[in-house]
Amino acid sequence: MLFNSFDFAIFLPIVFILYWFVFHKSIKAQNLLLVVASYVFYGWWDWRFLFLILFSTLVDYTIGRALGTAQNKRSRKLLLGVSILVNIGLLGFFKYYNFFLDNFVEAFSFFGTSFEASRLDIILPVGISFYTFQTLSYTIDVYRKKLEPTKNLIAFTAFVSFFPQLVAGPIERATNLLPQFFRKRSFNTDQAIIGIKQIIWGLFKKIVIADNCAQYVNEIFGNYDSLSSATLLLGAVYFAFQIYGDFSGYSDIAIGTARLFNFKLMTNFRYPYFSRDIAEFWRRWHISLSTWFRDYIYIPLGGSRGSQLKQIRNVFIIFLVSGFWHGANWTFIVWGAINAFFFVPLLLTGRNRKHTDTAADGRFLPNLRESIAMLFTFAIVCLGWIYFRANSVEHANAYIIKIAEFSTEMSMLSIERYSFELIPLLAILLYYEWFSREVEFPLYSSKFSLLRVAVVIALIVVFGSFSNIQDFIYFQF
Image 1 (tube, rainbow, N blue to C red):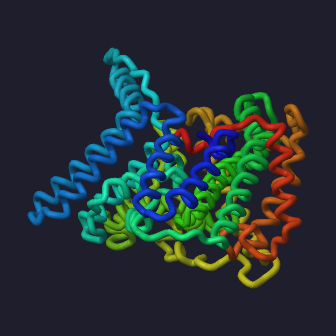
Image 2: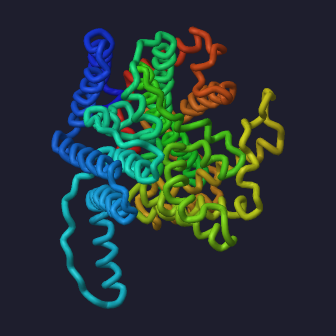
Image 3: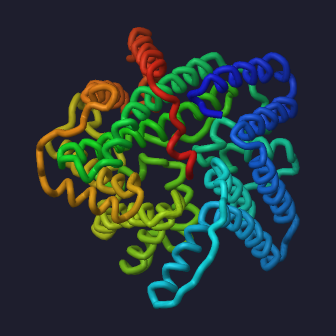
């Protein structure tokens, strides 16, 4: 079920009414309702996926209970190992089986040996990368004794399958989200209004920005060999805004929807395109994933401690793993390597924590130095996005080489409508975000009057009426 679909527009009010007006007297009843609603929401794509998420839930619930009673260090490590093996094993099979098989066959061919193997027709379960990491955070934190294992199966199932963030995050930590299922929840009008505003802003980024960019991005990347450098450069910029509007839009809708039920999810994006270096970008982009890798992989590896060689190793490991998490394609690994390449110099010179404040803090506009830093960082990010979007590494390389030809002629820019209409739309996005960069999301600020909210809603209605409903990009991960 898509957030930007008519089905969800019916589903959400029904769940909201039942939650606050029928089951409001019992936390257990509310949690059970959320479980049922979440399974309906998830099963809307394919009911067979429900068995997988139920299996993962039961495995980690059982292991969590066992970790609560196990005292022997070896037994505890074994239990944690089973949880990791099961979760990563399922993720590896559904997401990476054919990738490893294909590369295994190619490796044999490289050495002159013929080897044949049949690929499997595997359907990737929606959101498996997200809820797998969420359940793993539970068992790891219970193992580390940062969290008491829960005995309440309904609450734990609701935590794993909570429908607002089930499919594409934020990837919640058990230490943050799980305890909220045990607290009495009362309807909060202010939080509900903020939630509705955040949903509206998320829909604006998805429907008005991302979906409109998508049609041009698809055409430009699909016909790159016949287009000019300027057009290809524009395609890379459009994709940067497509993926931002698409993914951060989903996060805004998820967080806003959770607010309607009086749940607080972690912030997943903090205006990343106003970053002044790549380290700041990664503190502002997909925060739930980057902090997950930091806490469960980077720090256990030694983090920024030890020799410079170990620090470089740890940075590349974390970015390559992050790239591979996104998909079974070498393009994502190269994307991760590009980010690591630009991150390492900041780490070695101690400048990776230089920009922890807000750009142009307390000022109307950035100064020249900040402007250049933001543009340079955005250029680096766009370079990485070309590999992220391309079908193959060869495709991305050819795309970049074509840009380097520096032909300025604009070609094939009218596809259904003139693509230059996107420029004022992107200007509206940047205007709203720049002057709200110190708050959680633009419509959150009291500075944004009802008139400006009405403008956003009008744009959603207008473009939603003429655009095709698009899946969220991160559903494939």
